[in-house]
Length: 187
Image (cartoon, rainbow, N blue to C red):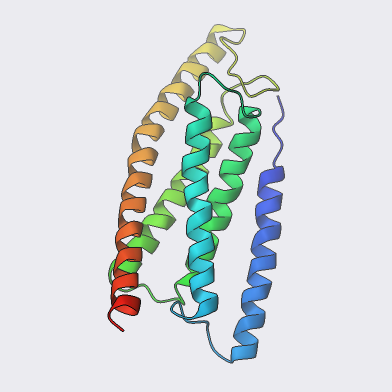
């Protein structure tokens, strides 16, 4: 089955749009927008919200056994879109400074995003129906071996990607708490 890449095209469109707005703000201000200013904070907040939506909504839908809130393939496309656009906004939020805890969060964001891109590639190797349901066993012994190996790699990938995502969000919450404490509450 051929897979649609429309979530990638939408993510690219969003990157160009957000990047254009960022360039405009940079041009008007005459400097790189600071992470602590309104525009920088807005990028960070919206990027973090998108990343939370990436994790929470897709995971809830994937584990929901009693309700069907749309096709899983649509949810995966949403997961990929928000998983690409959210981190892009986070990178712009950094003001290109990667110090301390914020630098660690940025590095972890990069690692989780790259891991997600790798996972998408592995995922597309598993044959599925139009609704995104895995096809049991394809014809031929050689294809069955390839499918079994791909499923094994996908399982290993899950055991790495999910804990990395949890560590990322833990570090991000610490960053948000520290930013609020030091930049807001102490003033």
